[in-house]
Length: 232
Image 1 (spheres, rainbow, N blue to C red):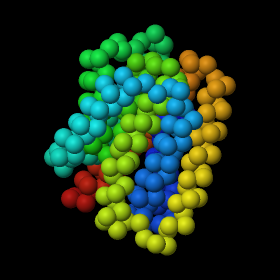
Image 2: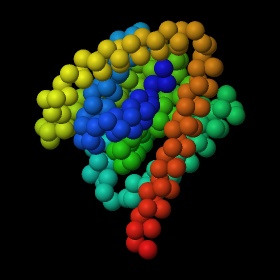
Image 3: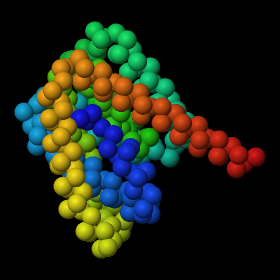
Image 4: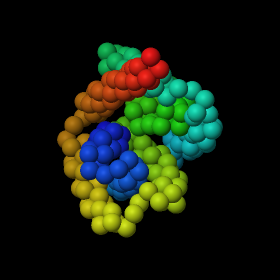
């Protein structure tokens, strides 16, 4: 329903039961299935213009971000990103009429910034959602767009994880289960989206972004604290 956040919720839960590498690949597969479900159930909102102008620059700039990933300290980046998202989403909540101009230039700029920062920080759903909500696009179109862009990321990273041996045979049985759960969740999300109006939907997404951003800030402070304590 939110168009993001499944990895944020699923990964820490998976880590309670399996090792990190297995949790990463199972989360990526679940994320892939969820995006397929959202694209299927919200396909009427598919907008070629937004996909091309926002999605393509996002994917291309993510390559540059991936190259520079080790240059900047991730905890500090998460802190900055969390504060930025809270301020931006809070502004959209306080001023419902506030939005980015929906033209080619802003779509390309928004997509480029999203892809670059996503690769640097390692997570991009909340930032992508903030940018798309900034254009205040219709709810079905928003979900279809977010899912399509996220799917492009999934199909590029999952083969890499598999080639590195993250998925062992004992976990193959989980794949159809994850597929069923992801489709069921997407179907329930579609039913819920139909029942609420555009303005309430936008508010729900912005509140979800703020909650995830708070987690970014807490995680960033915690990692920085551990690093400083180690050197002390």
